[in-house]
Amino acid sequence: MKILVAEYASAVGLGGTCELEGRAMLSTLAGSFERAGHDVVYPTSGPVIEVGKPLFLQRPEDFERAIGTTKADAGLVIAPDGMQPHFLEILEENTVNLGNSPAVARLCADKLLCTARLKESGVPVADIVPGPEPCEKGCHRYVIKPRTGCGSEGVRVTSSARAPEGFIATRYVEGLHLSASFIVGRKGEFLPLTINRQLIDFHGDGMAYNGSQVPYNTPRAAEIWDAARKAAAALGLRGYAGIDFVVGDLPRAVDVNARPTTSIIGIVRVMKEEIGELMVRARFGGMPESVKIEGEFKFQKSDLL
Image (cartoon, rainbow, N blue to C red; front, side, top):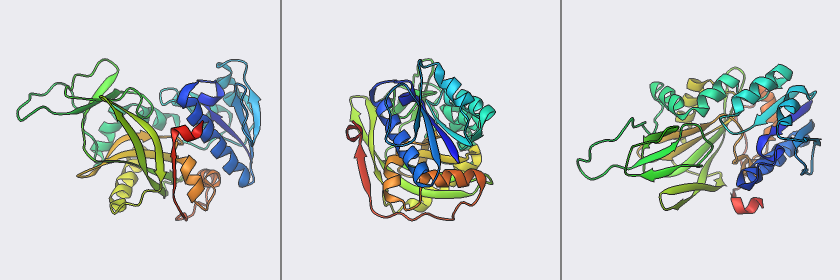
C-alpha cells in the first residue's frame, strides 16, 4: 500500500520542540510502515527523513493541498488538536483515514466536553471546577489549562480556580503521571500497547512534558487499562490513541490524544510488532489480540535534537 503520513509541525517548519517531536514521530511511523512493506510519502517544508518520499511544500497553506490531493491508499494526519479535525475532513475526501474520525478528534480536542463525556461514562477524571471555591480548610489547588491545546503547553498549577477565557480549571490530583497507548480496531477491538511514565518538569507554577519511559511496569496496570477501555468506548476512538492519567486514589484521565503521540518513539523500540502495520490492520481488519513487549526505552526531548 501507498501511505501518506502528514505530520503538521515538521511539514510547515513550525520550529521549537513541537517540530522536533513531530519529525521524530514522522520518522518513527514512516520507518515502521516501510518495514511492514508499505510505501510512504510525506509533506515537508524542506528537511527530509531517511525513509519515504518527500512532498515539498512551498508555503504552510500547501499542507491542506498535500493531504487533499496526494494519491495514496491510506493516510494518517498528526496535527495540533485544534487543527486536526479540519485536516481529517480533507484527508477523508481523498483517501482512507487510518486515524480517528473528524468528529471524534473534535470531541477529544475540547477538554471541557471530553472530560464531561468521560465522567458521564464512569471513567475517573480530574473534575472540572466551574469557578472559585471558598477556602474552608486551607486553600485548594487547581490546574488551569487551555480548553484546546497540546500536551502541557500553557498548563499551570494555582490556588485559584479562576480560569481566563479559553481555559478551564480542573481539580489538582496528586499522583504519578502515566499514559496508556493503545489501538482500537474498526469494530471496537481494543489492543493495549504500553503504559508509559511521563517525565514531567515542574518549574514555578508551570509544568512541561520532557519525555517518556516506555513501558512503565505498574501494579495498577489492570485499573489503568480498564479506564482506557471505557474511555475508548465512550469517545468512539479508532486507530492509535493515547490517554494521559494521573494515578493516585484512582487512575484519573486528564487528557485524550486521538492521534499518534510522542510515546511511539519508545514503543517501536520495545514492541516486536510493527506499529505501522497494526494501524493498517486496525482499519482493514486482522488485528492481533496482544503484542509482545521486550525491554525498556527512556528518552527525553533533548535526545530528539
